[in-house]
Amino acid sequence: MPKTPLGRLPREAIRLLELPRLPKDIVDGFSVLVDLTGTISDALDKLGIVGAIPAAELFPVNPGKRLVGPALTVRNVRHSLDIHRAALENTSGQGESEAHNLAEPGDVLVIEGIVGCSNMGGQSATTGRRQGEAGAIVDGSIRDPDQYREMGWPVWCRGFTPITGKWRTQTVEVNGTVMIAGVLVKPGDLACADNAGICFVPRERAAAVLEVARQIDAGDTKRKQDIERGASVGDLMTRQYK
Image: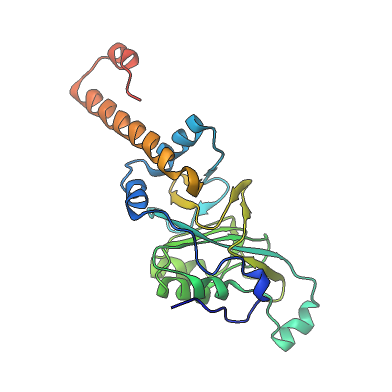
């Protein structure tokens, strides 16, 4: 059934109703990498692609979680409304509900947001989880962190705040290109995240990145095996693993 917008945003603000999607075997191939973001980051370096973000910039709210899935993008900007009046009138400019409405199971909500007020809260996260989204990556502040932890839904963000973004932010685009911690992300690009940070893999380069990542992953596994078997430091330094 074709997707239908909710009407929270102007129709032209929703760039795509359907994400361009990678084949399942490509997504699954990334999912089983042992050192997920470390391996992908090395592969991106070898291919000259900028896509890695350290956890020092966007940190995991639920340490120990990891995710791999296509990016479902949202772009927020600071709202110019009178906050007191907007609060009294309950005038919200946030529109990530349009993204939730378009989500397919396994999608990753990726928000270019602002710092100082929330770009996502517990109710939005609960909706995302219900829709089957794998998690969220927010370049900005979020609130209700305990709710994400209680529900076990993976989220990466720039910080926490009690201050609502309902009347302080405006969603201006869904499924358009966003900038996340200096990395350009298009809808359908592969979002990968773990304790170490985040990697975005351009959809059109995903097969090539996976091929290199598998070679690196296999080399790292073999080197660890050699270390455990007692190979000398000299031997380890002279062997070509990846």
